[in-house]
Length: 529
Image (cartoon, rainbow, N blue to C red; front, top):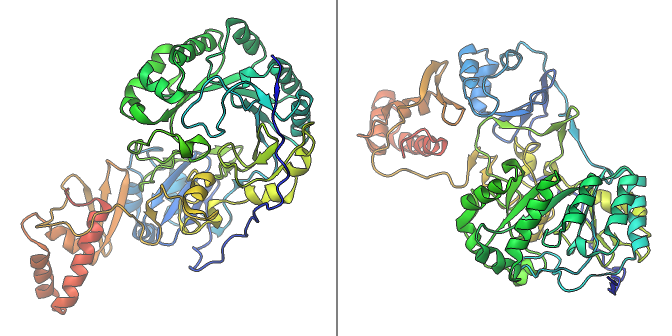
């Protein structure tokens, strides 16, 4: 196959300036504390989180519960350890640290940051045998690329020279490139891990065998277990069966395969069925990821209108984090940085170098047709400035106790807000209130406390353990009194009247305090729905 020429992208003279982190308009949280080996307390604006680096877990700790633990209340710490979400029981070292027996000192959480190129996308072709409605690169037609095969080989050489560990050969459709296997050989000879992102419709038995022999992994996109839904996206008849056959060929030869199910159109209604279908083909269910259309390329202009949100998550699996024990990504003793594009670059088929395959407007620079220029860009100030943007520097997130634990797609946030340092729109947590934006307001009628909670008296109040969520809530004396009186028969006015009669406090002030307490209890999930 002869490659058709594609015009090389001209050097951009108007590269957008990467702004410095915004100045603070809120007080900084208290410094992170080391409680014991591998155990750190990260403070937010209101609450805190316990990062267990050795076990890879994060435990949310409410401010009141933390204060009680610091007073040495062993009962409260036992309650905190009884939540069975994620890591389960708190280890003895964690209990001891929370009770103040461990040595505590300010010390930064050990976080790994990518200050060098570690992962490179290379778009081998702007051509594609399909015409997917959501394609970020607007690919289609015959194979064409501005870079020569020698240019792609140089990209691989330069990537390996600056410490890159893995390349993904993508497109367009990478199987259209006539020198695919020589380029794979070049990458493998340099010690690079190689993944092909292909629609698999062109995968033959011989090519599958050749890729398996070279230790290549494969990723592909899928849209539905129904051919009509799938081909409404690809806009090519017969492509559903061709991709299914490609999946079978790859798995039959033991090629590691992961599948991204891009939810759109009729596929929204077939999430469970599509997963079951892929598993039935032999795909590992843990290798299937559900995703959404990104606003780039035809994803902006031609995409099927998106359906409802998928599972309460945004396009990068940024689930609104409830206050419970959750897993922490730790590698080699370091918490993995949450900036998705940290240490990553993409070279387009036109020679542009951008932070990721989806963010194609915030250019880092360009290479020429012979692949020259990548080394300087990968080690330059502009790439490092982009890689350095983390949640610890972003509005609101920098004051959140989960700032080292949440996954962050800067592209999605930047495209939605126009601000490189904005809080991800998919996150509804407010660290200043310690609550979620979707939390209910004042419940109507006569609120009723939940009867399934484990409640224990502690100094100046109560602790309510919600085993279903793995949460322990400390209630001060006022909140505890209100909670005890919410029996489903008394409304807020009646509760306020009882407390005013007992305390002798001004009724107006008591009413305001009771209303605030009821709203807070509802937000914590401590009242019946």
